[in-house]
Length: 197
Image 1: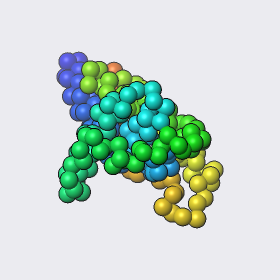
Image 2: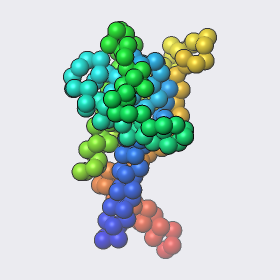
Image 3: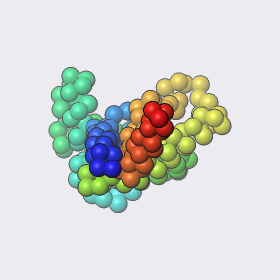
């Protein structure tokens, strides 16, 4: 019993950390049109919406975006953007002038992105289910767009895409829920003992 708890704790801790870093470091999960042009991460979708609606001050939006900007600068061998010029680097200057219809057309992606970002931040204290539900909402919203053919753009640079990292994020969000992982570990141990006997 204790070994299944320890395994579940280890698996959920690693999965929660993986999900946190995927979201905070802005690893591309999808490609979808948004207020700032094309968004590739839930953090960009959420931040562009927060900036345009002015729900939070600009300093909160910058604090959310900065870790990903630093990681991107290291990966692309570019200079790290200054904190003051961060919003310009992400093309936030004209996002308030763009109609909110772009985001509302893909409400599942917007809501799922909010849940994924909030879940990643809350996973520092305790993994929550909202991360997994957010990932499912984003997958469902993007899959629906692709299946219904709403994104039949002639220009492939504007097309909606889902990257394999989105599915990895969904699996890591699910695996971060300790109770569910504990049930799976117990079930696997039970099946293993049945096969051995």
